[in-house]
Amino acid sequence: MGLLSEDGVTQVAFSVFQNKGVFAILLGSGVSRAASIPTGWEITLDLIRKIAIARGTPEQPDWADWFWSQTKTQPNYSTVIEELGLSPSERRSILASYIEPSEKDRELKRKIPTRAHLAVADLVQSGYIRVIITTNFDRLIEKALREREIEPTIVTSIDSLAGAEPMVHSKCFVLKLHGDYKDARIRNTGLELRSYPKPFNKLLDRIFDEYGLIVAGWSGQWDEALRAAWLRAPNRRYPLYFASRSPPTGATLELTNHRQAKLIQIADADAFFGDLRDRVETLATTNAQDPLSIELLVNTTKRFLAKEEYRIPLEELCTKELERLLAILGTLGVALAVSADLFRERVSAYESAAEPLTRISGVLGRWGQDWTLPLVLNVIRAIVSRPQVAQFGMVMWLDIRAYAAVLVFTSYGLGLAHSSRWSVLQEMLSAPLNVEGEEKRLVEILFLGSWVGGKNEYWHQIDGLEHRHTPLSDHLCALMGKYSRSFIGIVPDFDLLFERFELLASLAYLQNTRPEDFEAAFAANSFHNFIWSPVGRAIWDRDRRVRLLKELESQEFRNVLRASGFQGGNANLFTHFARNFAAMANTIRSWR
Image (tube, rainbow, N blue to C red):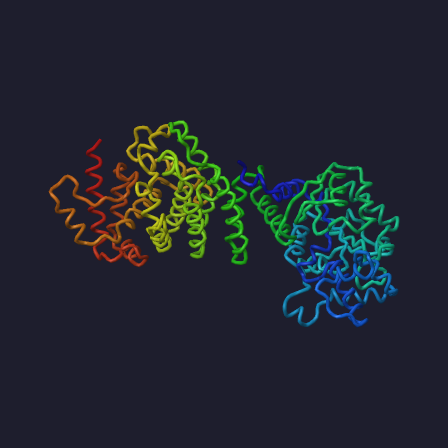
């Protein structure tokens, strides 16, 4: 399954990136709604309310219903304006009261460019968008462009079009089809919106023929002249993307079908354009060839970590990817049959589904701040505690259900170890997790042999691990070595880094062990003169084991680990652990 195969924003981003300057954007009133500038419908109802109250009508719970009861027609902005008999200048004044910010608006940061306006301006600044069509009277898109130090060519009338810089030479060409609220020549009645001047129609025909189009915030219901221009456009050489909160119906569906538009369901214009800009910028940075590749998501994560203001988008990105992962995991129920082939297929399915979050977690460990720990812990807890499709089946399938959490746990830990973020590593290993009513630390649930799915007999079924003494550790080391290029890069000895992480996880596993329990184990006359803890490759990798234990003898390193919380309540833990680890290695190696 592709990383973002169900996300239409990526398809738009790739089209925009690959066809720089080829796409135009059509912005409707919905884009300005987030700035607290009312839509035409909202202005209509407010005008009806004001007229009714002026006539002595009391407040109504639903002014649209009231209007229907009085006129037997649906509220319509054009009808209301025409009935008022206002001159163009008077209509302009009415609109200004809804568009221009008051002192309170300024205090509350309303009626200013939104995230969507600024994101579009960013796309213009980087050269990906050069033509903007809008039905809005406000000046939010112009303000956003000027905030990015772009002086657009603004066309609001035939006169301004005649004297405008040619579209092909303009850094940004903004066509305001219905005019500007400060100009008395605005078009805002049904009669005025029924047709455009010939020069406008000619320009629209050219844009619809020569450019791809991204539409947002426009319903396609009321602007008759714009609908006509849309329907008469014959060209489909570039895609048309129609972003909307809900699937189109009625007249809007006719428009999208006519141009074979690609429909994109969005939460709102702010999220859509912000996401579009971020993905285009990421593609530009990585020069990615595959927009659905995991590298796109990983590099987006790196970009978000670079600036504190991207913290919320980063959390949203992780949440979205977690939701995708949980949806896939929900399809991987337990089975009543078991075989080596089925086990390998299931492991591969878990790894494929979890790879994006696994690599993201490595990035968060490598470059993130301490606030990323709760984010990763939430991901792990969500995976481990997710509702299960079935609670029966072969024990092996039940045991390995948390494998995706093991991958995230390991990747984040490796990123922390590489950055020497020892206190965060200790906190992560010791983080509590409730499993089936019992609270344990993560290191007691997800680390190698402490994980119920970490049994050697399971992982011996993986090709090439049939005779390994630590098959899960070896498999994770190889897998993380491949993934780590995204967040660690090339290191002289990745296996040493991996085994250092494992050694410290083993240390954390035993950090609550009492000194007298260590001493009792060491004094035992039996062959088993150690306290068991989950251990990995270093047990068999003598050269690296000796090197790592020598590191642990360093007083400087011990001081760092002690300050990071690894010592627990045992002042001699590091000495006890090193002796215990050596005893385990001697005993286990003798089983060869």
